[in-house]
Image (tube, rainbow, N blue to C red; front, side, top):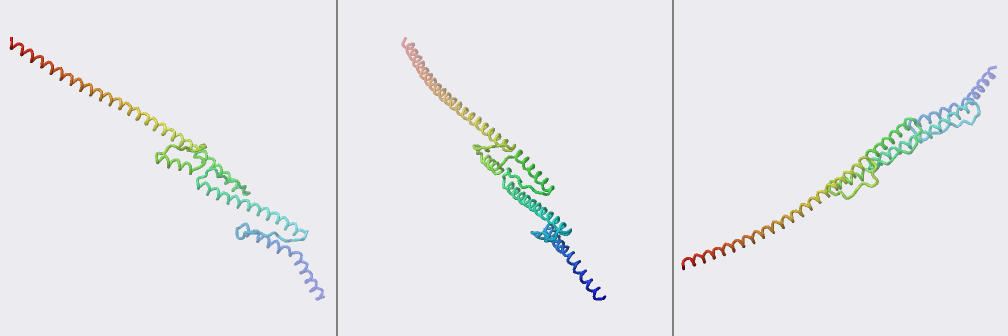
Length: 227
């Protein structure tokens, strides 16, 4: 009887161990999955259970979620990576850069949309190329107003071009005024020279007339003395 009982216990142990063995694989798979989503590991393994019983169905369901989560995290990582690259491009002066990767996380989707909207506003208010704007401002500081921003669309770009046009217009008006003033000054100088010449001529004529009158007066006095 004792032998039968011992045999039965051993048999029951092996049966239970075999029946519950998939639990160890499930536990290992879940541990690997949790390490993955907690960024402790970069890879995750699926649960290897070949049975078609309840444990097999549970394992398949868990595996589907593991793979879906892995794909989602990869999408999110790609979106975050592209976001960082986009910020770097914007820091370089290009305001046309946008985030195109589609994350799976709803919060990351919202963040992507907010960042892209912010870049839309910046491009509309400022322009497309901060480097080109800075270059034009540096030229303006050097009093060089020959160049303009090409394909200007942002408010700052349009205002910069308008400012350059107004300054060029003012400089042209100042140049025209200076030329006109120089022309009038030349005319005035010519008139003064002419007046001076005329005055000198008249003065000489008056001197000659005075001399002639003096000579006539002297002659008349001589005639009076003789008579």
